[in-house]
Length: 300
Image (tube, rainbow, N blue to C red; front, side, top):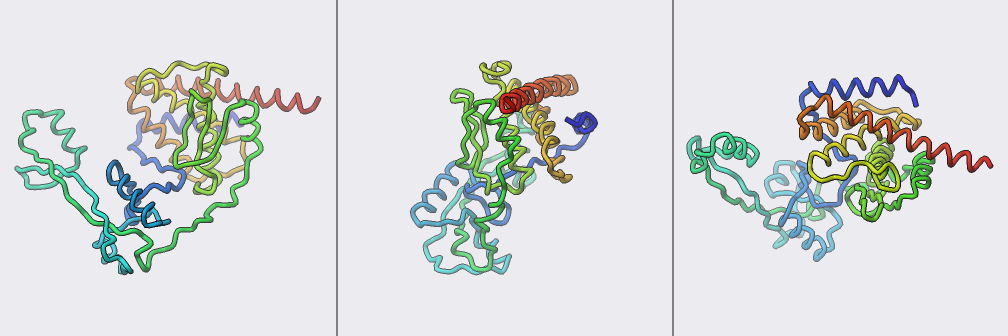
């Protein structure tokens, strides 16, 4: 591994502690229902209702639009009579300033000044949304996007040598320690090769915490979870240097954003970051040794 590159990555992560928070971008497209303009994924009962309607109406488009959004963009509705779906949006109203605020703002205010609780009222707005298949003028979803992402031989060696269960299905990327299984969305859902391979490596690095491998610490609380996420992300960024891919600035920013999001949970941030880097080195060394053994066995 290029030591100079690793040094630059470590420097970048340390500097990110002093930067403003960078928004993290999920590396793959999700088939979960989302707003077609804001790309916001619907949650809770709204997601459940829209999924049911999509199933019932055989919708293949996961985008939904309000009537106002359709009108503002110059789109048109077709065959939409009775097809609007009511979704709920809860808000907080400040009776003193007579303004709506977010729940995030509300929680900050109440945590600092609990006596102001009576000043705020929660209320529900109902908005009707229409599925993208009923909207004329919108860009069609490219279902074959990035269908040409090839299996990477280096990552395949890792999967085979770690003997971890691996499959691609659904909308989420995760490692299940109980089943010792890595799960990713299918490769054609990812934005590009870097996104796909980095996500594979992230989850495979999680799998090294299994008792049959490095037997890393047991995850008991959110602090432990944050530490484990830092280790996996830093490890994957180190291992990505082994692949013949030129990362773009947004790729580095996504690594930094992920580090920033989890380091905020931990108190002694610089020290915790150094600990995670040290653990990441152990992960990379372990994986590299496994691959070397594999190669030696093949030579015989």
